[in-house]
Length: 355
Ligand SMILES: *[C@@H]1O[C@H](CO)[C@@H](O)[C@H](O)[C@H]1NC(C)=O
Ligand SMILES: *[C@@H]1O[C@H](CO)[C@@H](O)[C@H](O)[C@H]1NC(C)=O
Ligand SMILES: *[C@@H]1O[C@H](CO)[C@@H](O)[C@H](O)[C@H]1NC(C)=O
Ligand SMILES: *[C@@H]1O[C@H](CO)[C@@H](O)[C@H](O)[C@H]1NC(C)=O
Ligand SMILES: *[C@@H]1O[C@H](CO)[C@@H](O)[C@H](O)[C@H]1NC(C)=O
Image (cartoon, rainbow, N blue to C red; front, side):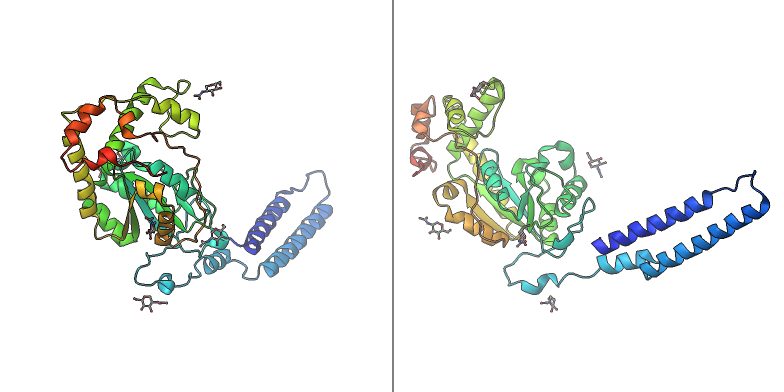
């Protein structure tokens, strides 16, 4: 609602209120009939006068709704006006919970970060949310009811993409890219056909975020499990930390990996990634690897280009937990390295961060 309209509505309310008040004034029985009539006449005259003034100021008189619709429904510029073949579909959501005001015609693009637990997606999402025009609403499908069937999933996504999902990531009205984080095992793979068609129908771009070194991911999963049970930081479990000291505490634990199960586990992991890429290949997407983002910050520029938002410096307070060579982070390193030697996973034993 524009300021003018708001004032108009307020004035209309005031007028109405005034009339009601004057009507309520009841002549007192004690007064003589003549005085009563004079009072009634005065009230009527002033009532008519006030109403005529009100109507004059409101212009259209009794059709305030017509005016409102007239303003709200003014079309935004054609969404495909600036699209090259590669640009995602843009939208002009009309949230039910608030008004986008002057950003009503700021186009919004939809995205979803598709990832797996312990793949750096928490860190990645804080980076995106440090951008003034990006709202990524977290792991919304970690709540089971929201993913219990495709209608729940669709309704949840509709709400997010209509900018009606209120989370700490919700930005001002000028959000230009809105999305959330979705783990492959949160109903995404089970309902992939319907979800792909939703993505394509509504123009949702997929950002795949995987980890190249799945052995490191395994270490991170086990260490996170361990902390979930032990709550090493003053009795609270932390999946992500914001200081080097906290990171050191969590990295002290060296998990023992089941040497018999390590290869089947990595195979499963691999298959999930392959299947996800295959299922979603028809969507507009980008594939990112955590290691690349860590080693090469210009990869983040690719992401902002992909989302078609302005290039800005992205920051995160997250501190990496496991920074040491893998050999120092696995209790039964010899067994694991013997198991993986000569397999396609051998490179996982050696690849470490450059920084
Ligand atoms: C938008 O796309 C439609 C259909 O492809 C086309 O007819 C129309 O001219 C486009 N509008 C603009 C402003 O490019
Ligand atoms: C980004 O947000 C700022 C601040 O709200 C706004 O002025 C600007 O128009 C937005 N940019 C885009 C591309 O939406
Ligand atoms: C889908 O799941 C929601 C939430 O669990 C439930 O309320 C709803 O009845 C289900 N709808 C269908 C069609 O099964
Ligand atoms: C635990 O709490 C104490 C006192 O509140 C604080 O000084 C210390 O830094 C905390 N330690 C960790 C690991 O969070
Ligand atoms: C860093 O990423 C950019 C953008 O993807 C790429 O062009 C460049 O080759 C990368 N640099 C290195 C050293 O890998």
